[in-house]
Length: 157
Image (cartoon, rainbow, N blue to C red; front, side, top):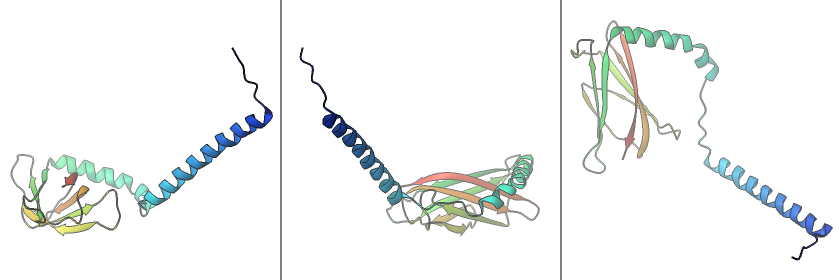
């Protein structure tokens, strides 16, 4: 068995090489993080946090109504044709509820600048999405006396 004796110069070279690799990986990770940052930040986070109890109250009131919304996105068979948003609101017995106004707020969770809103006209409304991928849709429906809200995520091909 031969054992190699490490000289002071070789040990110093190993230390420099180790920290050089660590610095190179850190530089790569920082560069990747800066290039892929989507810029998504919650607007008015403090105010939204303060209003959380109001959101809980509204959710409990909606649950007591017993209403159920059926929210679906039907994709077009032809490329480039609009998809169809289907929204049906039913009472606790399953009977359809005629709403006065319903608005769909459609957001892209992964990228800013692509969000849009649509007023839903009846049970079916055409919608053209600017890109494929994951989208979140929040529907706010109002009758004369009540307010109903529902959210759902969809994948657009």
